[in-house]
Length: 277
Picture (tube, rainbow, N blue to C red):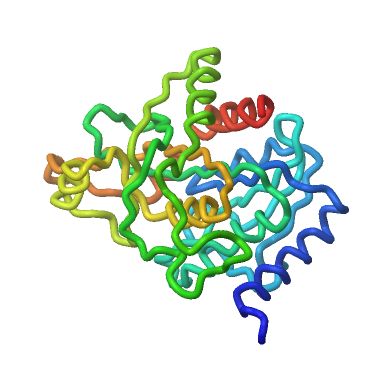
């Protein structure tokens, strides 16, 4: 029987990265969303691997995504971070969107940290708020559609706790110590790349979403399929409401600016959680 071509791709990328890590096993994987790449600058003793060097890796084309795989020390532990992710809206298949998560699993990660820039559909959220993701609503294709990769997990993985309750509690304790206020809520993801209409924002709020974006959930599903505990955080970069002024426009550059301002707080939180684990 031929080896699953998806597995071949995962192993080729894992082997290439592992050879660059000199036998070190990463404790945690981190995915950095739009404008949040500066956490990568805090990684000590970094090994920087451009996606274009990794066999079978796509290249990140999204605004505010640098396109590097970075390994090194954060919070005293060895980590691997994606400085920029892949999106379904870029035209990539779900296998490619989630390839890095399976690669991280093969490399040995025990935890996954995911972040994104999101629109706040919850009226209580302001630009620059940090939201701990408690749950999600998925309107993207499910990345597990197709033959099950039994080497990674079961056909029908449980999604009762997609975001680890223990990690969420720890985040709130640490934030209180640092004097940061955290929000928490449900993240909704659609395909993008167009921003949503006011009527869609209203619909998402009515069905229970607090923040809306175009990423993250496929990576979380694949991590949970492999039984990796996940901590997720959204940086609220725009108010996604249905009562806009007539001249309001959603602007990608403004989103990056708002994410950048909140990235320092997020970096401190991720670092302290990793330190504690």
